[in-house]
Amino acid sequence: MGRSRRKSGEVAEKILSVLSADPNRRISIQDISKEANITWETVRRYLELLAKLGVLRMSTEDNKQYYQKIRPMESDTLFSIPLSEEHKDIIRKVYGSIKSICTTSCKDRTLSKTLVQKIAVEFVEKRYPNIPRGWYLYGQLLLLPFETEESYPNSLTDKEDIRYLRSICTEYISFSDNIYKVRRHQYEKNNKRVYLVKEDLYYKLAYSDLRTSINKNKSRQLLNEFAVSLDRKESNTTILAIIEYFCSGTLAILRHGDDKLLEKAKPAIIEAFDAVWHLVATNELNESLKKFYDEVLLHDYFDERIRTLQDMALEALDGLEDYEPKFELPVNETTEKLKSLMGSARELSAEEKKEREKEIEGSDASDITRIFGLD
Image (cartoon, rainbow, N blue to C red):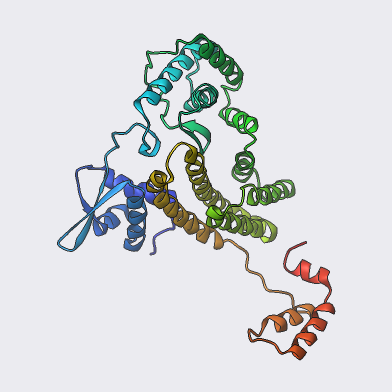
């Protein structure tokens, strides 16, 4: 009996759980495959991806490869990107001041990492603009994370700093009971279209019934918006192609899939969107950090990571293809003409080209549009 198909995230989690059981143990692909109950080829592919991301260490002994999970890095910054001690000290004081200001207002509610980061990054952008910050999965953030368990005993002392920080805290605290609103507030203030569309699209795909016409049409509208929400640059052509691949595939499922197929395809759509967004957000972080760091340094931290995320996104999209409806073109005069036009790859003579042009002119454009689902 064949093994059931797992989601990409589940496969990686299963492999990491085997490696995490004993951090000091070096383990072969064969042993991981056996203990995780995942095929050897799948394990090999994921180990290569995880090693490129810096999660695993690979070594060779007697012509056999072994893998070991790397212990948490000593660096306390996102992706271990360097940050000066001076900047770390300021950020910690900002966190300490936010905790002091917000604790009373939020009463018994625990300050979320998202809320504190949104307040802190907006304050730093205005008062300490040289401190590195960037846009990532859930918006703009500082490279030194906020830890809810840490005390942050020191605070800001400048009166203007405290006054401005208090005003931001007051603004964001009104959303403190809803993380979605906290994120959206930041996106709207910064006019980050791609993040706003991402929020709406994910909510619609994940939490609505895609079988209803109203949700199906809204999802199609958001997919079209998502496909054009990123600025087109020479450096992101591959990412844009992956976005368009996801959007076109999902649109095909929504347009031509019946209720049963839509229900089955939904988890694969969400998984693919998550993979695509991780890729987009990582590239956004890389781009936004370019004004703080040398591009050569960023190359070391991001290029391999982005290539790996591209591979993961394409793998998820391959899984999405399994749900794209397969349908035959209707047999009629128009499709027969189309088939004849597409049937030959050789260069046509001048006389043949004129004949083909007459055939195309004689075809009803509305029929062609309808056949290919472009209406």
